[in-house]
Image (cartoon, rainbow, N blue to C red; front, side, top):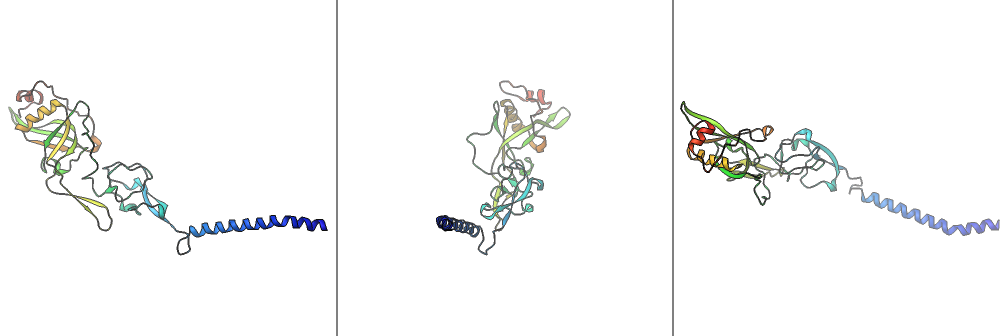
Length: 264
């Protein structure tokens, strides 16, 4: 009996320590619960946030199937995020957006008429090509819808022995810049989404990438012919389908007749 009492007395300090540790663990758990609860005493709900369901390309309108709604803890939702897919469908990214990235009102706009950003140090001219500027306007430049990055066909007018002619002289010409800004930028007071409104007239010039030989022919066409442009569908972009005309030291009206079948 005495031995049993002595054993209990020896174990009492360990029992007290165990009880204290249990209280500490309980208190820590309670603190975590309190910290994760909102001010009303309930766990804060997640927030619906629209994210990209696939990689999105800049200047390409967003479709419904490219979006999904996920639940984010409120503290992790970025400023300007969208909660409803319908608010994003049809908008245009100003930059490439990766799959899973939340959509915010500073990375999408209402139209792809203007994509602004830091200009590169050099124009995007392919090796072996030169930059050449063509005159443009509302009537000849597809009402100002031609943008940097688009591809156009160039039509020239002239004369043949049978009379006046209009003919496509170069195809799939890459536009690398559009001159004379013709857009007003406005930010909505409620949605915060930037909208782009074009002013009448369109860009006054188009800077395109052509060969040096093509540039010489274009100078001749510009001096004596009327030029117009057609805008290709983005699904038809690709290498030029008209051959580069033969070039020598300077071109003449006779060269135009020989290579294009009419006089400028």
